[in-house]
Image (cartoon, rainbow, N blue to C red):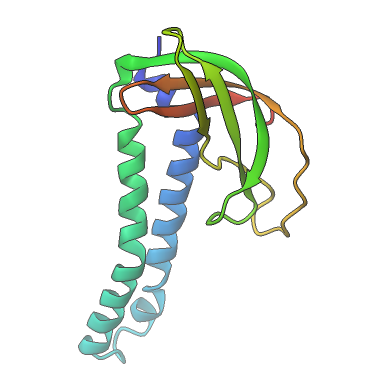
Length: 157
């Protein structure tokens, strides 16, 4: 049985929360020069800069919040599976992150092959290391309504 606590402590939920927090911190750090030099900044410049930064950061933050909240939808429909994740691939948008292919058969007999989210990452701000073709053992939860998988834990993390 998957509970809200299980989903909250899953690799994917922690990964999404880390992105939300780090992007929010970067967004707020953009305004530090305006806070320090508040007497010399024209209000129109602050308004323009704030609008541009909001257009850059808020859609990213909003998308990841949506993904985080979406993990908790239809929580009663998750089924837990333990399997080997194969064929690592680089994630196009998250530097140093990789995702795997999960292939399994559901309890209802349906064959499912899905890509996980790129929750496995090399060191932060490090050079991208070459991919090692290895599989990892993981515990996942599959939601048949959303047709999505959620990585709960793995032996690499």
